[in-house]
Image (cartoon, rainbow, N blue to C red; front, side, top):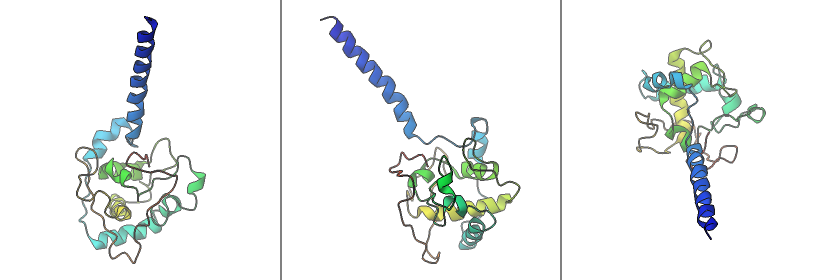
Length: 186
């Protein structure tokens, strides 16, 4: 009978060890290398929130920035080359994307790339101002997700985008890869 409590204790201990890391997996890991994370999180857009900046970002996203090739025309991570990429491109329509990162982190990844993914850096192709404009446009894909709820990690970015006035390009939901809920890692 003495073995029963020790077996139970072993099962409980295994459950605690398993639950700990599994819970951590639900948090979206930063795509910025740890040695640059503090610097990236401190970055703030110098651009005003404005329809003109969103329109400039839209033109860059669909043109010079080539973002739509991977992230898709509606930011759902379903662009023409997305199926060839592993991991798949981020879904900007998903509330989890905006909830777990700052605008500085997004800026850093666009400028420098994302290690371990197919996301290359665009520092040689886009100016800093153009990258900030693209981010302002990308926010419009999240239409209303988390608005006013302090999205992002401490010191996070919040939601500043809106799809109103964007020629009927409203949020269509879904996205790619069967990613659901706030624990999605896209």
